Image (cartoon, rainbow, N blue to C red; front, top):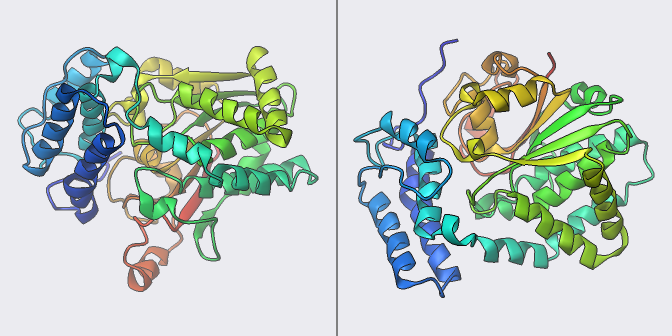
Length: 382
């Protein structure tokens, strides 16, 4: 398939340029504001990274310590000599977070530079009020509950701590859901003995709602669920395995229905019906058609894959401007299993829209692709 060219940070795409030139250095300096006990060496390294991006310095070659040096060295070679504001956006974003955790010495200390934001989210009321809302519908039939949870998980994807514009929004309003293909996914999600893979996005509120969905799927005794998570901090709030356990600890401490949810998930985890799979691929600058064999093989046996969020959507179809009516099945024809995408829109790439919808939105609200207000539930059934 001939894919559109990838978005770049050179100004040819305004949002990509704004993200790298302004948002990303702000994220680096926010780490310093929230981690004032970092050593002078760490603080200097983070500030240099922010200034390198602002001044359009060359991309730095990957360096140890990290378990992904070999893979990143190969990726960097494809962009050798390019600068932060003159390269592919997907590569630049992932390279920034890798450089940031290197500067913070994450691989030596295990200290998450975004831990304070994640803890603030769990200590606030947003995750728990959202969970209580979906729990209140517990008397409905299982398929109806799973359908409701899919939509809750979609709008939970707005709560991205790297993007305050989206995170500040509540549940969806009329007109926010641009494509709703839940009915195509439900038979696969509720199938007896289903093997469901969830490619997670954000920790905190979104992950709490994801776990509620997963618990509902696991009510079918032969179903198994695999959650794919990051191995290093990225995009501020993206979920790692430790974030799952931290969230479960908060649920347990809150008691009541939250504790019952934890006990359900714990039981399934001990029985091997629920598993967490961290992998460096999810923070690598590669797309899903470039995934290593072990990742591709894991999806080949899936009944369905639940793909969460904006960056994972870009990883699926490519970080490019497709004609918006291009069928999702065409853009991800290589993918080996059925997939349902739950994505609130925080970047320009989009496929699978009805005819003329993108043009109408362009006229009525020019920022509809990037402001986190609209969302899609898109399903491909093989």
